[in-house]
Every structure is written in structure tokens, then in C-alpha cells.
Image 1 (cartoon, rainbow, N blue to C red):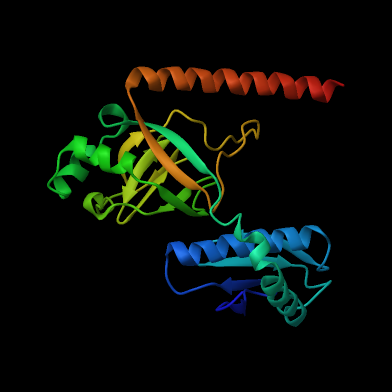
Image 2 (image 1 turned 90 degrees about the vertical axis):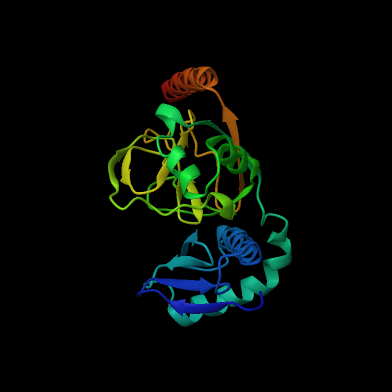
Length: 251
């Protein structure tokens, strides 16, 4: 892969830089290289190679320093990047994941502030936010927290001066030029404009994370009644999967 830079990250990892900015083109490189390396390593081609973790414009590759070293892992990564870029290119953009969101009111108490910040109506904020398609560049901060690119500048808004100590799971917020979803209850300083009834991160591990880095996120506006229906369906889905898991364990 052209225009990548590999640097050490401690004594058991290397960081691969695919560009100097956050953009679709760089994101595609990161996703393609991530897919290529995971595929390459899964076949046992590089002794000691471990987890591959993508970020906005780079990715981290962990390795076992008792099995291999920086020079060897760097050489093998460089070779894999060249050999496998085209094979992984088709996986770079990922799938489109729809996230239902109930905007405003008790679900998005900062919607009015975002509207006032941009001199538009609350309805316009909802239309613009739900009308976009967002690239999921990386997952971090919290398990399952998606950092999304592509927020329309018409609804950008600074973070809160004083972060909240408790934000509910599923809250959808805007922080500067980014939007994202709090997958679990957490402190945070992003302005909350809505909430999704989906369970994004399940600490029990019964419900899988619905997205990964490289996917595209599409927010779909719903009303309060639909929110309740989807939340109830999510609870039933989890209970069914829990029962099925219990039956499998009992066999």
C-alpha cells in the first residue's frame, strides 16, 4: 500500500499511519489494510502477530516480542500491505447500518441548543442529522462508542462547557464537528439531540455490536411510540438469545 508509515508503539506494537487527515480516502486505506492484515494474520503467516486495531487515519498492530521483533513485523506488514491491498479493497467501505433515533424532548435535551447555535429550527436539525450518511472511522472512549465522520457543518456545535456526570445508554450527541452514540451510561460532554432504543453494547455479550470500523451509519427518525416498540422488541430478542444460549450450553 502506498503512502503508509510504520512506527514503533512501545515494545509490543507498531502503528501504521495511512495519511495525515481524517477523510474518506484515508479511511478507506485504513479499512482496507485492516481487513488485509487480519486476513493475512489469521492464516498464520506472521508468527507472533496479534490484534489489529483501526483508528481515524492509522491502525495499531500488536505482537509478541518474545516471538518476533519490530524489524520483522514491520517487514511482514509492509509486504502484506502491498500484496493484499487489492484483495481487501472491496471490504473497505463495509455495510450500511440503520440506527433508529427519537429526537428531542426527554430523549434529546440539547436539541434546542444545537438549533439555536446554528440559527435554524429543531426540525431542521433533525432533518439534516437524519439525512446524512456517516462513516464509522473508529470505536473507542467506551466499548462500542462509534466516532462518525461526515457531520453537516450546518449542525456542528461545541461541546458542553461542563460535562454531564451521567448520560443514558443510547444517547445520540454532537460534539464539535462529530456525532456519535453513547452505547452505555457514562459521563460526557457532547450535546444530546436524541436517543436510540437499540442495545449497542451488551456487557453480557448476548447481543452483538451491530457495526464495526468502516461501516456507514444512517440515522432514522422515529417517534416516542416507535421508540417503545423497538425497545420492547430488543428486550425480547435478548431474552430469546439468552434462552437459546442456555440450551446450547446444556447440550
